[in-house]
Image (cartoon, rainbow, N blue to C red):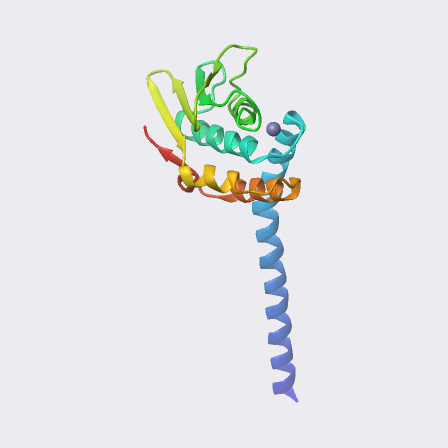
Length: 165
Ligand SMILES: [Zn+2]
């Protein structure tokens, strides 16, 4: 009887532990990111892979160079029309480099490259060819674009960009 009781108690404790561990993990990782991404979507007007790519590049630049919107300059080279140009909004939202302040520049080019400059530091990121292929292979359904955008948001920066400098 006592043995059965102990086994039951152990089993219950294990379930409680499992429940706490899972809900904690969910809360920590996703809620904080979701809020930032939600505000970016509100700013840009919709979710898309290029918006997310701009956010990822900008967040990485903030981490490496330090976020200082008045001291940083961003130079983007990509197509000057959507969806590629949506990248610029991701960079604006995350770094605070804005077209209004004149410290973000967009130059028409193939592929996607971004240069961040702050003081004497420079950071250059180039979008990996396989990511461009992944985006181009999507069906034009909005849902597929949203799913890829969410996936890219969770992906490690080195799997998305070549860090040239
Ligand atoms: Zn867009």
